Structure formats: C-alpha cells, structure tokens
Image (cartoon, rainbow, N blue to C red):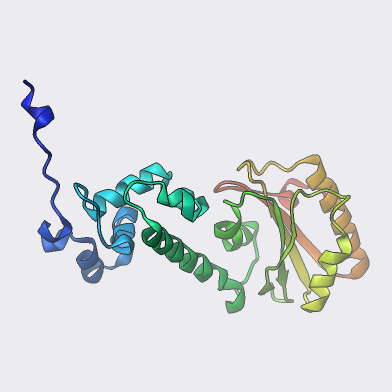
Length: 238
C-alpha cells in the first residue's frame, strides 16, 4: 500500500506558525505594503477551515477567482460557492474591496490634476475596467486641470441614437467646468475604439467648440489598458 496517499498532510494553524510568519504580526512589524495579496486577504478572513489554515484558504480563493479582479467582479452568492467562504466571510471580502474602491474614488474630491491620458486612466481604472456594462463618465476639470467631479452620465452601449450630447455639456456647465474628458469602458476588455465611439466623439468635440467647453480627450478603458482617441487622432480632426 502506498502510505504517502493515506497519511494526512500536516497543515499548521496560524497560531502554530512562527510569529514572524503570521500575516497579522508581519503587517504590524513590516507594514501592509510588504505583505502578499494572500496575506492581506488572510487578515480579512481571520480564520481558516478544517484542514486548511486561513493563509491557504486565502491563496485558494485568490486562485479560484483569478486574483483581486475576479473577487471584485464576484457577487456575494458566487463567493459563498467557494469552499470555506460563508456569507460572513463573503461580506468581509466585499467590504474590504469597497473600502479600497472608495479610497481611489476620493481622488476627485482631493482635486487631483489630470494632464495626460495616463492620469485619466489611473483615476478611473479601478472603478471602470471590471464593469460588466458599458458606462460613460466625464472627468470635469477646472481651468488648472484639477478634477471637479467624475459623474456617470450613461450606462449601456454608446451609440448616437442614445447619447444626447447636451446631457454631457449640461453636467459640465452645472459644475462650471472649463473642460472635460470623456471616458467609457469596453466590458470585453479590448479598448479598441469602434466606429460608433469615433462618431460619438466627433459630435461631442464639435459641440464643445460651439459651447466654448474644451473636450480634451476620449479614453476607452479595457482590462488594464486603454486607448486615447485624441492621441490617435480619432474624432479630434482639426
């Protein structure tokens, strides 16, 4: 008989690990930024399950959901389908991710400056690149390119029959914005602009010239990447 297949594998509990290896103690000693994602998630989850300590549980859950992006997309119901994740642990995961999302979302209130397409992408990527529906948002800017607000204007596919250009400028005028950047996401993850994206951009840019509001760019956000229509000269023809 193969005794290796029948001998249980010893998996130490967190309390059995050396203190300098325990996630919570490591965070206190060396700082959160040094910890792995699994260690941080283990701190959120607090306890493991029979035969699996909390660190191994965190590693398995991250692998099952394809790391943090997958956890961010998953619903409470989907999370509870993972072995060892009940409603309480699922709620703790979602709460921690939401705190992180809100931290990033505070940037407009802190008057972040947006002077490049990269700035615009980094401002919105955590909120937009994992959305399952298209959204169109505006980054409203003052005369010094400081962010006033970044409101969601439309949810759903971008097309000229749905988008009313006046709605975009109404939001800009309400905030006394000097300029704005259009941003929308492609749920497929591919940020390549469609002909409809280019047509919509062209209409908005032309309206901006008439209303004396600068349309600085239109960025299409995909999965960890984006396309700037202004950089590609699409819809911004002179």
